Length: 132
Image 1: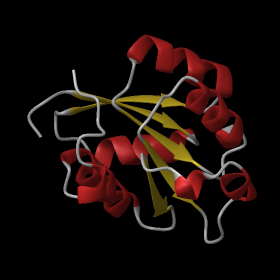
Image 2: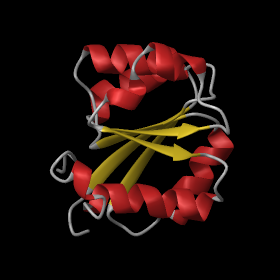
Image 3: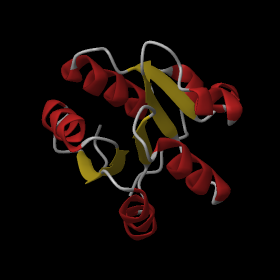
């Protein structure tokens, strides 16, 4: 990756910090938010190239709905062992700009999955990342 990409993470601070540390390669700037309204504000200010949401977080569904309403994306949704009910209700599995990853993976593997998504190694999503 040779371009600067801003990643907005919405979820627990500990997981966000672990992902930020494990994906530290100089090309990613992480904005970590654990509350809904600060996360929405961070989206407006940072205009991230990708949004990572922990689907088990209490603010996950509201964040998804609000961000989808303004055509935000692409998204990486971190899931539990069983998909969060809101993901089915909101059609998260049918979105072409959404990559769903089990959150049970160690943080370094999650970070590697996110980097692969951003770099275009996951071919279905090539061209979906905003860079700046």
